[in-house]
Image 1 (cartoon, helix red, strand yellow):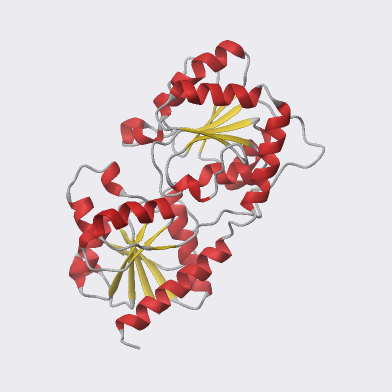
Image 2: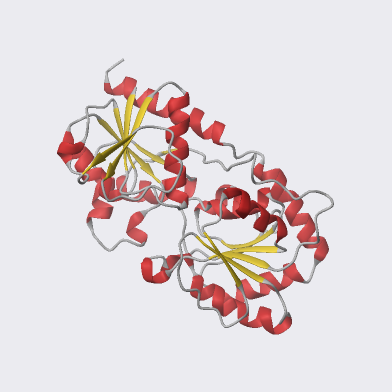
Length: 333
């Protein structure tokens, strides 16, 4: 099949990583896959399929395709209006939760097949559209995100991925993280804090910390391997990949129960979960893990076992089968 994937950019981030990896997998299945990207759209991932550069993503820009695999809400209307092929919505998150434009919700009412990345996300979409999307399970880089060697130094400190709320990422909960650190740093004033940012930005923390900007996967894996606790604070997520990566590296995870994380996160089994937007509950969970080495070890070991099930190979197989079935149905075969 000829598959076109429109995207406004392929800059560093979990959503674009998913699109790049899905494109790679579909190409491996023999499909003719290409991205449709505006000329000004940045590309920071290594892309192994063709990229069609256009002035902007408008209906006339779409090449004739068997499948147009849309994702973010604003890629859907021009694909739908283009008439260039069967449009499929690959939803990576329920955009009306953070996008104010009413059209974000309206795009889910279009009569097009929809795929989602978690049961939680599928339920949100079903409540609006009246039909339940098929779930495509995501993966992680299992060859890279591995536990540290047996002779590695002891783990220490907190690792956190910071997203700049001034760029529209307030729902990532950075303010909650800062508040939660109050009681934690009072108990452990010399606790190492490592902050990862996908892009350079100002990190407002009133405690000593180290900032790592745009690490490679290998560098990020080392940070996961070194951390005693990985903390995630999102208010909502379609899936939430970083906690799973941290689990794969054996880190103890403390996270908010942000929706899609429920695909793999089990409270007191492979992580500690707290409600979103509850900084004091988050602080208590962090303190619990920091103060209990046996708990950290148990959560870390369970996380490694959990992560083994989340391969990109499974994602590719599910996506190939789903799009093939949609294509055949559209042709009446």
